[in-house]
Image (cartoon, rainbow, N blue to C red; front, side):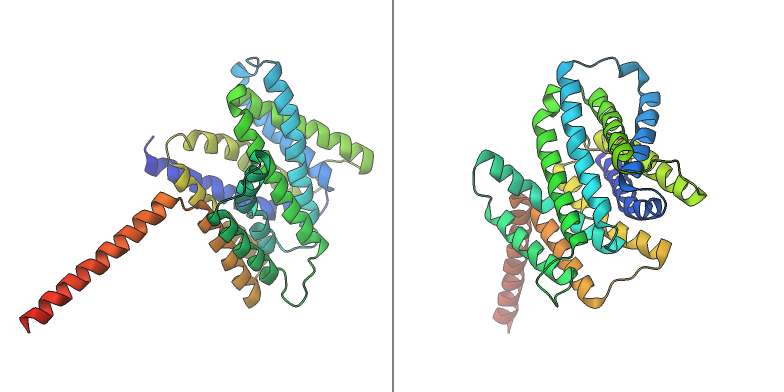
Length: 309
């Protein structure tokens, strides 16, 4: 697979992730949070198990244990996100959850007990300013929904950091598949204890569950794992910053949802923080070096022009 094709696949995955917000919003019209999570990951588990049934038996104790641990974190991610989306617009939710990119280096810094770099601090400050503007600059306090979404992004960062640390200790495909199954089981237990679980009662909610399970979970995770082997982390990171843009697009397409001017300003600041976090120093130096070379070239041409005069 070429890098160009891998990048296109990651754009498709990012589009799936961006569509998940509107799918969750539609699903929660008749399904409770844990009920929807259980159905989503049950569909994803069954679909992935059918595709990779030959490797399901290739696991060890470490793979099963880490799958269970990560499933709890993954359940936390989607629980906080979906409770937050009950009171926050789909567009705004996409940008708040994208703060995962900002939280990852901060979580890593806490684990290794080392202060984050200047780029991480700069990105964090811009992200905080973006959150302030995006969620309403009239008051300093955040709404409960916004807080839930930010906590969801933090859980996602912890999940990503831990996955990066254990990924070399497990069998990847069984780990991913069993993880989905464990999320479905734990979510169903919570749903049975605190909700009244039931199947979708309308075509739109069924489409929501199938879209979340097949596109956003099963296909999304598997395609991402395959494509990232053939592209750079810089390309992947920058492509994933498109997720909130797709969230806004699908929210407008499905509900005609629009953001106000100050929300767009906040969204741009959040997006800028994501780009800052993802741009690697070498890439920035390359841009800076190219800019300086261009300025030097212009000065040389101007000096020759003046000399001729």
